[in-house]
Each structure stands twice: as C-alpha cells, then as structure tokens.
Length: 76
Image (cartoon, rainbow, N blue to C red; front, side, top):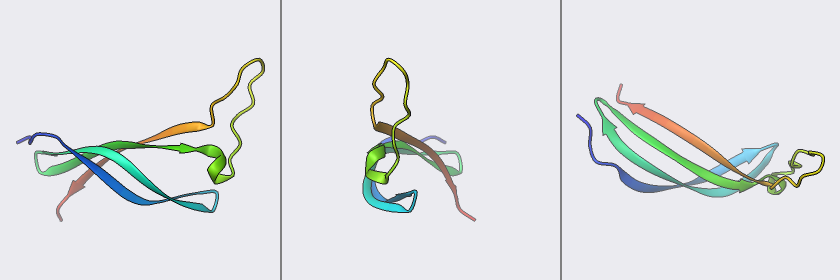
C-alpha cells in the first residue's frame, strides 16, 4: 500500500562544528508498505556555522548549501 504524498515542514535544531541554529526543513511524507517515508531538504549558509566555502581558483563559491535527507520510519 502506498498513500498520497503530503507536504510537511519539520522544525528543529541543526548543529555543525558546535554551532546550533534553528532550521525548518520542507519535506514530503507518505506511507510505503509498512513504513513512513519522509524525504526533504533544508538550505543553510555555511558561514553561519563557522564553515568557510571551499576556495576554487577563478570562480566564486556560493556559501549556501542544501542538505537533503530521506527517512524511513517503522513501528517496532
């Protein structure tokens, strides 16, 4: 059995290099067989977490990155 996807927002804290920030991820959730699948992403600015963007000769690197996730939840 597979249900229709629903759009959800997931608030939480993200910690990188010891820096914690409130974030809100956007995701889609659906039932797939006996599991709930949640797939989504959150965009962050590396410099907000004390991370310097990589240095690449002759080009500018955007400090914004997208973290993607895919969770499968089962009942035990």
